[in-house]
Image 1 (cartoon, rainbow, N blue to C red):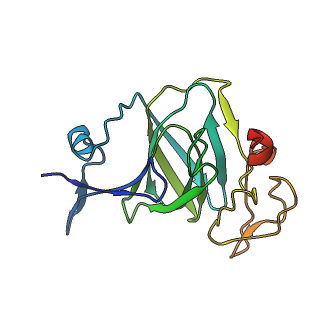
Image 2 (image 1 turned 135 degrees about the vertical axis):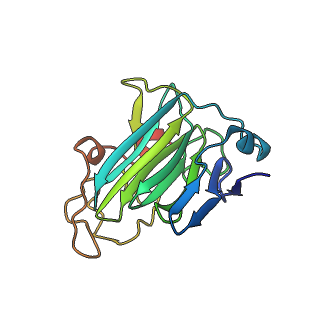
Length: 200
């Protein structure tokens, strides 16, 4: 019997995966990945690398994608809470430029599978968060591309974020609803928007 529930998202190639969680007075147990269950659900990807990151509240990472060596990613949160986003960048896709987001937390145990050809990013909503993800290809230095996290042409509704679009990915002036400033890397504040990057 399968230990996962797989839900297709409005954008083809994105899936929310909910593993069965067995809990009692001692705590809980859950299989975080089972290849047989995934294949029974029609997901036959092969993972070659696991990554983990830690971030504090207000940190926004993204939007990142790979140019020549696209990665499928199975992402989850083992501590804290994040809002995770994928943007369709697949050439010829009917949903090109559209986004989908889902809240991932240590409490809800949800996982998010993002097929190859999407940009990805997440915002930390808790005081701290630990983020884990499996990848279908190895990391290739120099292969990363990016998009402005706040590009109006994409129109991501980041929860709890307040601020006005300054015409660039600059995070100055943006905060969470409790006043926590957004924190982005210098690189992530310099990405261009979808129209400039893809000339569509």
